[in-house]
Image (cartoon, rainbow over all chains, first blue to last red; front, side):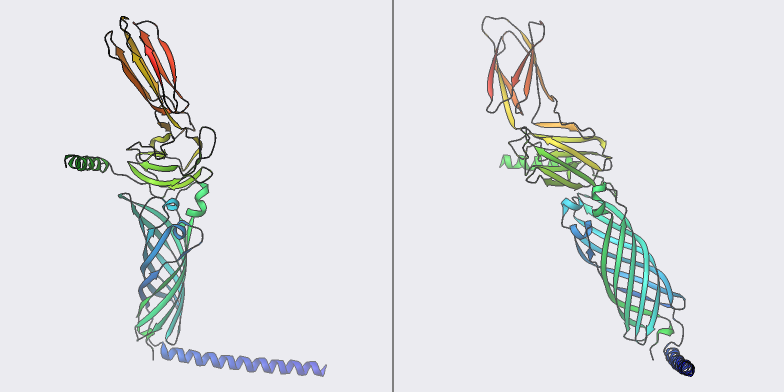
Length: 216
Length: 224
């Protein structure tokens, strides 16, 4: 009986000590953050290169040679560390398997959409993850004509940026994207033309908007 | 030099005609064309070309595999008729790519609306020819009115219906006078088919002769 009470008292003391230590650490962190985050964080603009990499069984991966493109994104902080904003990207491709995709020469892809996400600053680093949705247009050229395939794009984009100066960072952002294609095909071609998977890599410059990004 | 000049002019004229009509490719659409090519004995034919075409532009092309099967993904024309060409260079030139076999051209009446074009088993017969010597016998003062009908080596079929039977699509008519010179008529056609020669002597009743298409050709003689 006495042993149980002793164990209970020791446990309570241990818990209290741990909690107190944790509270002290949080207060220290918050103070440190307040020191580095003086001012407001309006958002950021990222502009950079976009390396598209398709994967899986689909007409882009199996029938095209993808070329580098570019991407741009505006993040506006709306609620604490949460942000929203427009995003765009584009890249080019040459058709390599005309038996599979049809007899045309080249394609350029443009995505216009919106992103919602969360961002956290860790000293010189800004870490964020965003979920985007938008229109994806495949503009094809060949046989003296141009025609279009389109899709709804959905993507998940973590981003790591490193501050070079107060308002300028460099970033790298891998992106997992799926395009839900609107191409009408017979059921035999659904697997090939139903959707396209990408694991894309973006990197470039980031402009931080607001004095809250100032590093001290 | 002169023939070289003619070729340039001809090429320019063809080019200007072919570029007059603009191809409109349908957005957000791909077709699947598939089937199997066999000869008249049912044997699979490999390496036979298959193309889809609209406004004299190739939308997709492939060849049959060792088992005679083919499958190709094609673009579609939004306004103009779609052609599926089997063993033919182009809908513009009508030259058989494999000269040992006949060709088939499937065409939609208007713009094609089907996403799956399954041609099933397509039989490509060999090629043969026939000839008929129309011999005017001296002293027989006869006149002959005739019609010669046969199937050409390029068979035209509708894409909408699953039909693989080639109809007579070539026809020649003429009237032979009492003093007409001897002449030979004939043509290239599908091996094993027949050409039909219908004639009336001196305006009488219509008589019919079937002329087999063979390889090598057999020359028949019609005396009047």
